[in-house]
Length: 131
Image 1: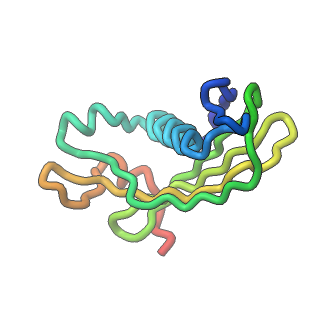
Image 2: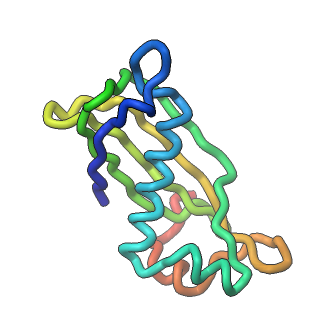
């Protein structure tokens, strides 16, 4: 799934580039959009005592976005083992398509007891495990 964004002035640091922490917000928003497009709503899961959590982020910052830059966050979801989800994400500046960041975000779902458990509705949407 692709989600389009535009850098806002307040997301930039004193060096006039997007602050490194802001990229995590872009990635999170795109993950929420992907899951929403699959019919998975965080609020609905939380009401049932199921919480999707990030357990690891690997990010390679390749170039800096600037105020006003338009960009796309590309997100793909894969199963990673029995209890983990892996989001492969990339931020590409528009219109030249230059890759600004590549990331692998790993997560899981926790049940009401705080134990890892992928909910059935999500389990049925994800293909076979990559490991």
